[in-house]
Image (cartoon, rainbow, N blue to C red; front, side, top):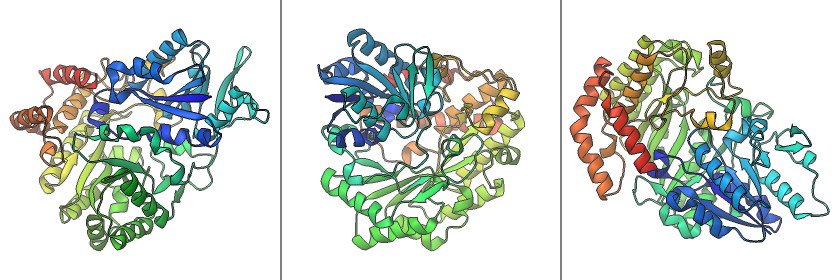
Length: 504
């Protein structure tokens, strides 16, 4: 018997940055250990032929198709492919997992064509379900499978999901399932062979917009580091066996325990491993604690970017979302990192939270421009338009402010945080001017920092055109950001068009 796992299209972002489908690889570990074959279809690699590619993986022995789903645009393709499976292979069970399924399991079951939903970590539940469907004599009953959402007659049942981190032996990760496609993964056509890894699990912080506090609420210890020597063993393994040239740490937060990161980079330097490093999770309050010596080590070990959650230039908003820092702290750590030019500082932003005013947005614009002026290594990520996620503190606050939560799966698909959304986010506390200000900031953030000239990109015609247009538009972007002018925003429609064209 076999199981096919499917990764949906992601829109524009999925065409520019396509890292390995780690959620599928992790989900398949225990199923493979149970002697059941796992096959993978990653729609991001060939979106126009995703149905054909899925059909080619399905045969008479396929028990189920599992789909990893994030909230937002991926739901559209996930539903489309679920309908395709249901129409053409009605005997095959359809299972949804992933971030959206973790907090919306029972709601997803309102869609009749979806048979099961797995909430939380998926490897053990998927294997248990596969063994149940295979008819193993010692298989767990549906009611015993952790995190499983299923139908029992006329009612839907949600089993509690596993209240522990999913920590696995890296040698069991089935990289062989994507080995033939490794050249198709990467970012910005840079040519790097990127592998995403964990150095730690969980997050002890309480950011009010983030789903992590809810996801880890049942876990006693909210943060655990992986042994530094095993992390470096993992790096050596993917470098030697699969030709990895760059490691991207996808921890919720890598630097809660700075000593563990230091042990990792010391070991990388000791073993003379020549590889690039990037860190997705870093907080301002943590960078304040980093010594120049530590930052020098980071650079020496190959680190070229830290993703930092700045979020806002308004102290009121920083306090509301519990970032444990001040605006002055953000300015200070940016100047500190300027002294380490090998490391780019990538700042994340959040806009449109309940209670935010146009003045708060203006303060964020001012901070963005100051960071760029203070540090030539600054890279800006487009501000995320606030998206109320269930079970977060800001979700409850949003409802108090008149937010009407989505009722159907497709409503969640429209709940997009960027210019890719055709309808935008329906946030009753934000008027049209507020939303247009956010759109303007999203567009201008692509240009005001000159990021296209700072990060490694391909030399194909697509990026040649992007670099050319960046030189032309950057002066206008800086003027818009400086003066907060969001009128005549024809760029918004051009970006939406480009998102659709590039995303498909």
